[in-house]
Length: 526
Image (cartoon, rainbow, N blue to C red):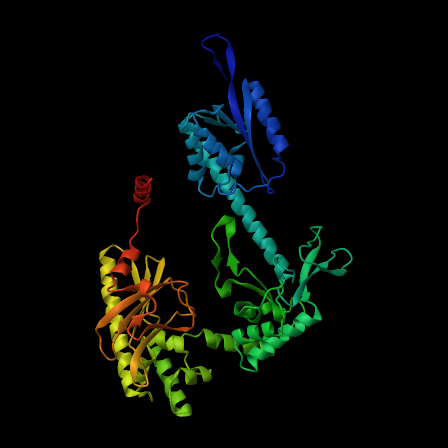
C-alpha cells in the first residue's frame, strides 16, 4: 500500500498508527509478538508506522479504562493527524466488547474520519464486501464469548475454593485474620495487611485474630443480644473507652452492624452475595443464591448468641404497619399511663417516634387515632394544631407555585421538608409566640440536627391565629443545629437581614439562571 507524491512522482509509503493491547487472559498475544506481526505486515505492504498506542494489562471489555484507545479515537478526529491507517493484530485486540455493535461503531468512527482499520492477522480481506462484514461480525461475537467463557470459569473456580473452606478475597474483618496455607507442607502462617500469597497452589483461610479483638467482638454480640443495647449504644461505649476500629478510626453504628450481621464470625464462609460479571454494575443477589459453607474455619462467637442477635436485628428491620403502631401505642398507655416522646423512647418495644411521625404526620395525629388526649396545656395544644394546619397549607401553596414554574417538588410530612428537583431541601415551619410571665411574646427557631437541609423557612403567627406575620429564610450555617435561637423579641427581629414579607424569596431562590445569562451579565459589568 502506498501513495504517489504529485509533485515528485515518487511512491510514498502510507503512514500508519499501530494499536497494541495485552490483557492477562491472553499472554501469548504479548506486545512484542503483536508488534512483530504488525511490523512484518507493514514491511510487506509498504506502510510506515509513525504512531504507537498501547494498553498493557487492560481488559478489552469496555472503552472506559483504555486510555490508549481513547486517545487514538480522539486523534483520528484531528485533521492534523499524521496517519491514515490503523494496524491492529486481530479483532480481539481491538476489543472484547459484549455488544458487537460497539466494536463496529469505533471502527466506523475511524473509517468515517478517513482512517482505515486493518487487522493484520485476520484471514478476511480488507474491504467492505458482504463476506468480510459477516466474518468481522462473527469474530467480534467470538471475542465477546471468549470473555464470557473466561468469566464463567473464574467464577466456578472461586466457588470450588469457597466450598473447600478457602477465603475468596477481601479484608478479613475486625477480629479475624488471613492465614496462608502451604499446599505442600500444610504449614500455616498469618498474613499481615497488604501481604498476599506468592504461589498459585497456596491457599488463604480465615482464622480468629488477636485475642483482644476477638474478645471485643464477643462483647459486641453480648451487649446487643443480652443487655438490650443498640448498635449506636455499642459504638458510643467503645468510643468512650478510646477503642478504635480496625483502621484506627472511631466506631460508627454501621461498623457494629456489619460485624453483627456477618456469618463469618460463626465460621461460615459466604460467597457471591453481590455480582458484577463482565464489568457490569454491582447488584445484590437474593440470599438463596449465596454460597454458604458452615464450619469452614474456627468461629469467634457461638451459634446460640449469633442466632439471638439475628432475631433481634430482624425485629429492628421490620417496618410496622399502621395497625402495629396503634397497638404499640396502646401497650405503652397500659404500662406508663401516658404518651409523650420521652415515654416512647424509654420503652424499646414501643414504635419509634420517627416511624410514628412518618406514618401519621405528627404525634398528635397518632394520639387522636388511638383515642388518647395528651396531658398538655389546652392553649398550647390548640396553638400547635393551628401551627400544623398552617404549615400544611403553606406547603401546598408553595408546592403549587413551584410546580407551575416547572420544578419537581416532593414534600415529607413527617419532617416538613420540601425537596426541589432532587437538589434543594427546605424545611417549612410555622411557630406561634411564647410568653414571658404571661406577656412579652417572643419567637424561637431550631435548626434540625437529625437530618440535612439547605434552608429553614420560618413563618411567624400570633397565638392560635393562622394569619402569617412574616417569614425568615435561614441558610445553612446561620443557626446552630439542635439549639433553640430567639428570632423575634420585644417587637424587634434579631435576624432582620433574613426577614421577608412573603414567600417570593423562596420562589426566586429556586429559579435557575442559565450560564449564558451569567456570561452576558459579567461581560456587561466589565
